[in-house]
Length: 286
Image (cartoon, rainbow, N blue to C red; front, side, top):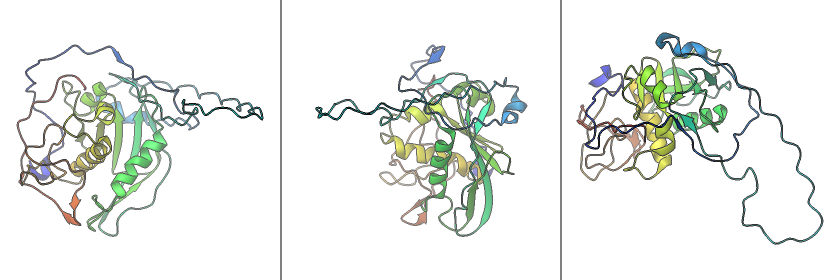
């Protein structure tokens, strides 16, 4: 599809197992959500698709200070101290439709080229995701020297909710993903549609079975969808056994390539033949 590829996965061929019933609510158990950041709203993001907006959740109350331990020696506990284990991310199939938007403005990443500014937001209903922390993770990926800012063609900067932005990175529930991408039957993949880079929280949480390194997959997911915003279409695997170009639809298959999260490999851009494979989109969200 070349530069005209919007990044929306449109094929509806399903795997042989067929559609399986969706749970009304998917709960990922874990510790209590990390509080302490102000809830920021960016409700106009969904106005064009008519998703209902939600009201802000109440701020969590501060925890009382821990009691001072008695001055006696005790055996080490095998249970980690509270706050040392990151809480698991939970989400419903459909979120509230409103968004918490990160406020912090970051440094400009990249040494040259056109400057694009972006916001980062997380949909209401996604639990145990600190929007500022998620925004820092997005910024770290997009500022990596192996990424789109590494060869001098692009500069990228994260901005807050009230600053002008060229695109927005949205972490959404599976149903909202379908609505924002204009493809409501697909609750599995992520997409880019216009100035919206839509990251499906199901892929952020579970990844895909053929990419065992979740951290690598998350870098890939961001770079692939932002790559569409920068004008790149889908590509094919150029060499069996070699790294997959980041614009290969690695979420759906590798086709002989090995997983790769970065546009630059060995300091040079890695590309494959233009086109995509006829891979089925799995039913469900994970």
